[in-house]
Image 1 (tube, helix red, strand yellow):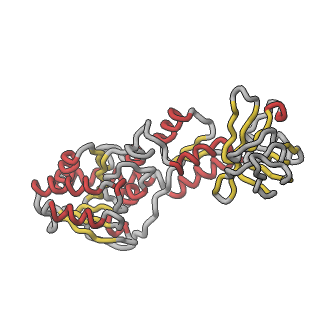
Image 2: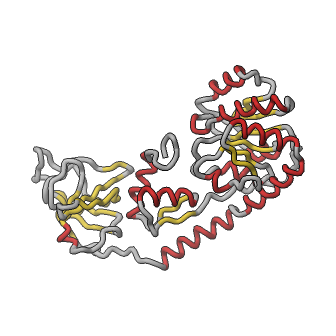
Image 3: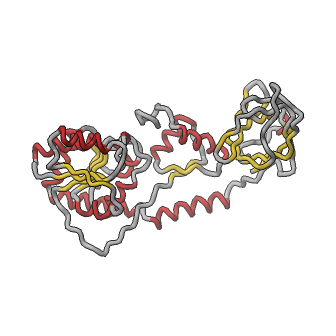
Length: 350
């Protein structure tokens, strides 16, 4: 979703393109169950949706890094959606209770200058440090009491798992989608809903060794459920099911040819419902344009398409018109040019 990143918000154009094309794919694979629920609510349930999470990174475990009980870290891009200002303001409240607390912010981004200014404004230059980009997040996590996340929206949140995998609990602001599913509140970290609550959890975790040990153990156990082997088995199971289950062979046959039944000024290839004789179009993923008659014009223009195979962008039925409109794309771009009546001879391919 776009801002404010909750159900009912507008869908980002890139995500909308994926959802639109799901109808002509074998499976739409999502990272979280929550995404599946929201897509079902907004676009209708689909049997083609599968949920397979990201797998956690396997870090080398052949060295020892001394953990600092007062150190907390952020590893993230420094941009608006990460909302790192919330962590800094939370830390201001926490330092008032425990002045020995230290926060390191690792990452780069467009808001770096703004965050530095906030640190100075809040008088935290001796407690909060901007550390730049790191290629070794595991080393950063291993040194810390906990990692902090304040994203307004996360598709998954791989850094949460990376932190947990080395025994570093996560304190995260509650957000769609990954934090809600990865973090079990009080078991492998904390989900918080305010800067005051975040500060309280920071102070408590810094002072309570038994709590740290409990959350660290829970985090490692949680991350193990996202191992490459287990996630890989989910992908293999999906591929096996698709290859051995429902057939997606084209009912029309690659030799069946059609002509477009109407002119279009917006790139639609129209086909009459009577021509497809009630056969489903959900198996059609490509259109092969066999021939183009450039003597046919519409609005004094001829089609600038070239013969070849194009990806189906969308297929829509126009109620009351007894026809379907097929949108095609090539090289990532949707065709939007003029297509005169009966200027195309084409095949529908799976």
